[in-house]
Length: 323
Image (cartoon, rainbow, N blue to C red; front, side, top):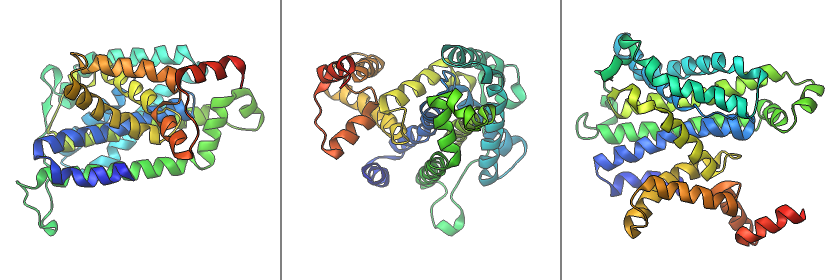
């Protein structure tokens, strides 16, 4: 609820430049949500989800520019394209798990920027591509196409992100979600109960890729330029770290992870803790691993339920005592 209120209040307290910057972080939550679905709910460790953000962005740019499709049609098509690519990339990984799956996705993530340069008609090649189409407010909204364009795009991105979180919550709380969690917890037991392991794994990976792809497509809505340099392996690491920091086992963890991406630089600038925000983020992730292995979502849940929090030594004591 507090996050929703903050998103509603942002246009009232920020200028258009800052609003677009915050909107880019909002859509990044879909990439983090993709990691949460794959790793937290299906047990598939992916270190290359940044490539799906890139595929979604390039698909959106191609649909609206090359094929002149409206944004409202190009967006779901970008989701389908990215989900299909996720399905195909996930198929070779169905027979492996753990560190080996992480290495496969890491390899794809490392290759993607170089591979994207080989298709200049879609990606713009080395220099990237400008997107000529603009997502401006329609006349019936009464908004100024020039002065209110950023506000319109921000509202649209927040709405789409909300719908994707709602859709994902319904999937994870349904039959498919329960099957994913069963596969995550024990594949042998899941198979003995008749769960189709390849179908569930591929479906989970496809959904997680599609979510990340929508995040990339919305980046094109906000910024009319896309380049392979935006989707390096460091984006994948950032998504994974944000998911771990927020809480990879819950949908809310994707929100908390992105909130941390906003707050950590702000806190660092206010108190001048360290020279680089990335260092602060890394230190925070390491400390949280000891204090709360289930991330910020776990801290918030314990605080809301009134459970006593006894810090690092309490966690260590419980871990080794079995209590």
